[in-house]
Length: 178
Image (cartoon, rainbow, N blue to C red):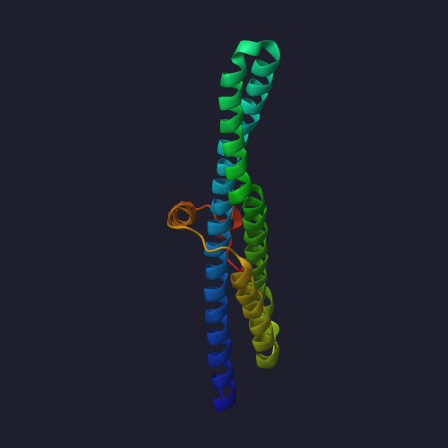
């Protein structure tokens, strides 16, 4: 093996290692964003359902009985409070934003894995480096726009990954040489 080919092999190994890091980073980021999505969906339901139900009850109370106007007013105020909180928190937008970020991270994860597993052995150093730069830029751009996950999302994502939530059945049954 020449010095040139040894240097190229070391460089490809370094690129492979960096692709693995990128893949792992995207995996954790996607899982955390999916957990954020679940949390925001819960907040949306916790605030939205009572707001709707209380509005319906207040309207019914006001129409059915003139003596129930005070109760209807109190219920309407409670409904408005839930609605105002829901609007301020903007849970449905945050839920959609977290889901979009999670899917973008999954795309990066998949592209990094496919580059590493399928393309890297056949690419020149320049081609491999260019793909790594492009994937890193995509990840960095996504990091700028994704809402930072909270501690609960991090813990739940870690638990999901550690329990095999990101493992494909094929990964345990085949080796690349087969």
